[in-house]
Length: 237
Ligand SMILES: [Zn+2]
Image: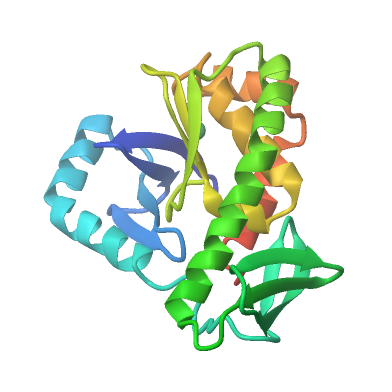
């Protein structure tokens, strides 16, 4: 069945459009990241699509929020023995007690969390999360330096955030790039790919042929990386 794909920006929401030999439009929000896809009959105009999305505006936004607010890490208690992925490698969490200041660190294949006795789960989670963000941000400048040399464009600034629907964003007006903090859990090659993708938006705003041609030059394996990344998205970290 022949399908043509396109990406449409609807009020800042990325809609993955698939033109298929079908009769009616069909809108879906996929877990876990809340990616939106719209199947539509082959010759549907962009006006029709915009109109359809407007009609389903409330449902769409409500459903994205619902999918996004589902806990990504189900049932994690931040206790000894739990698995955590850092740069694609598996670590076991080990919680130890200390009378001194709390700290987190890697010891062989363990992520050691030193906390005072009776420290709450929320506090343990916060400490681990803060440490993970630090690992990401410590590495990220280097990734930007290397990627900017490849792409020949520079971001004005970058920051990181936890995002549910995107691995990164690029504001082409301000040149500010945002990177999803969850990338710290995956192999470093994915971080490179996302940074290159966002920097490439400083040349091309959409995901059209010109954008793809640049990606082919800057990151020849981007299609494979994108596929792998989408497959990883549903896994627990
Ligand atoms: Zn993009």
